[in-house]
Length: 357
Image (cartoon, rainbow, N blue to C red; front, side):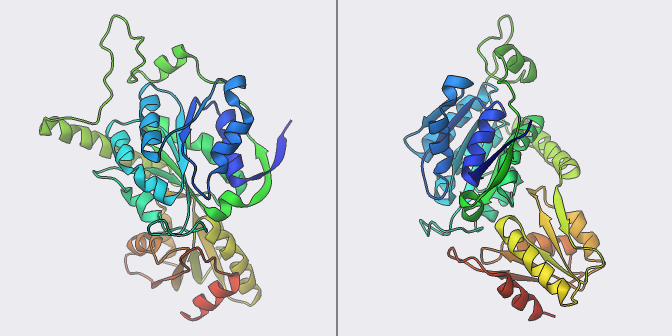
């Protein structure tokens, strides 16, 4: 029987983490995502499933705790918001260099700097382009509902372990703080030590008697070996790009104009599309669910059909760069956005599109 609750997006993350068999959460409070850890503390999963929940002394400490847990093959995660995720970037790069699976949650707020606690989508570059150093990518899932906040926890772990690439749920303050009905996922038991060893033969479990005990590190001083390691990582990146693209189409049938938006912006655009369709304008919405891998080929196909595209983002224009690269100049691509935590209305989106027609 389905279990349905009315939850905030942040609360849904916490419930889903427990239910998907997460072994550990290490985090530090920051608005607007603090309810993730607060909910975990209230639910006390260490008494029911054995899941560890720990408030670290800083974001830097929390990402390094996640690194350590992931190195043993455990399902571990952290959550933060924009400036907190910035502090984690060295640890994220180290984790990618060590090929560690983990789940990161970023409930974006306005910036740069400390900025505002209101919603923003200005961490797109940080997540999708890689905020740390080196040639790496993060599997980046962009939820547009509280239900997807819950669903993407298990999906994020699944993809991360499959490809040994960290996953990020890139949300924003609107989705993190809003309340909606959620169908909670069924419980998955935490893996036994034997299952961890069998599923993660690369992990440093300390229980590999009779054979070499795995070393978890992103350091390699031999450039020839380092190049081979990077080539292997790039092969996995190409495989993800070929097989894991996710997106949603909304009223795109025979569309002359296409809006492209993710997260809370996509919800606003749905309303705008319905209004414009009622007025007789054939407008559709393409919502990238995976910001990486990006739906490049899908947008390229739409470039053969539509007259123009417009991205709607809570930033100065970040995803618009990837849309323009996707269509390769075949159609005009415009951007409309608000910054500093200001959320646009559907009417503003409509007016912005009409200004370009």
